[in-house]
Image (cartoon, rainbow, N blue to C red; front, side, top):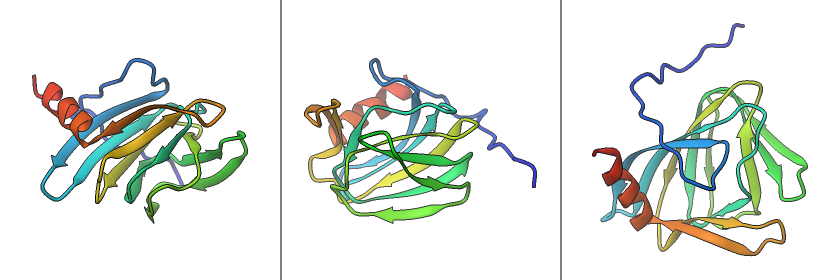
Length: 144
């Protein structure tokens, strides 16, 4: 079966300083219902910064395969294109990355209380968190 690529020509990818191997596009920040919808593009054969999801979320892999690595670097799981997963908050710290091609994954973050993502150093110390206000700022900046 041939690989098919998602047509991303209409997505304006953005990056954040210090967050290598990932680009994002925020689709919606619903402050009333505490939902943040964002799509990430993860570089092929790379891993993003160690982090933990601080709210429940759903993912849909729309291109490539999503690889999930434990904090120690061990490959934990591979989610192929079309995979839809619903996950609870505060799971184990991990890194995500693309497979042999850039991976595009839609994340719907739900019931956001404060933080959405908590980024960690290699000793599992919190380095930075991103919350609903941060993503609202990113969304506002996209439209300028």
